[in-house]
Length: 119
Image 1: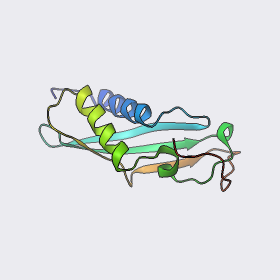
Image 2: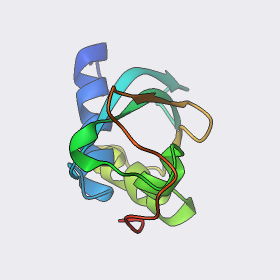
Image 3: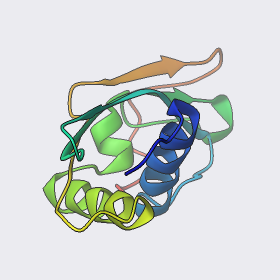
């Protein structure tokens, strides 16, 4: 991977997730807070992020990031593949953010109303 700055790695991970998840969506803003590359060369990336819910997209069905991002197994593999190509790695990489996405509901957001489907 060479020497990459944390900012560059954060940008690449955020770009991969937003592209795979079809973001931006009205009222949703996804921001990667930190990335930890594990292994040499890296084979796993632990990602901490925040999903911001804004009133422009309200009402939302819930405050669960998995519902709005659809980051299940298939999409996580696609994010890993996108990141692998961006970093010019030959081996498969894993992106772990399952339990690392915080949700921030901004003032005026309404939850609990069925309004959208997973992208």
